[in-house]
Image (cartoon, rainbow, N blue to C red; front, top):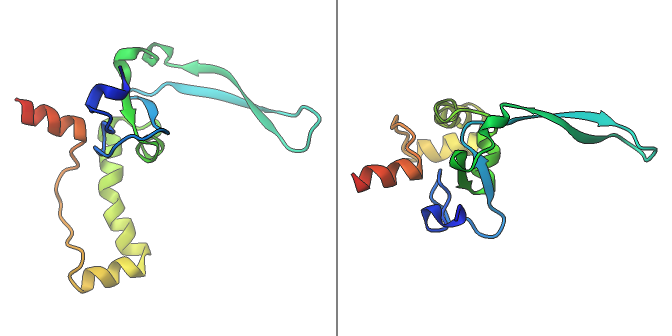
Length: 126
């Protein structure tokens, strides 16, 4: 049911989900973990609880590709939209190959608002 919500595509970027897709909580469930040792080298973690467990409901899930879900993390959609928009500035500051490609006209920056795949579909259906 969830996988097919957007014809097997990520709710956020629109790419095909493939086999390693995630069920994203649109409104985050914040899981709390603790570190422990069991005698083996290093530490392990275990889940000890969750904040906002009410958000763990089927109507709060979206199918997401792994990169989108990991990037979104616990952000709200509006926070994540701002983070994504900030990637262009980070690339310009930190990636010489990006600046070189931009200098030679291979990249054209825009200030368009990030629109997620599910939003585009809703707009087109209206």
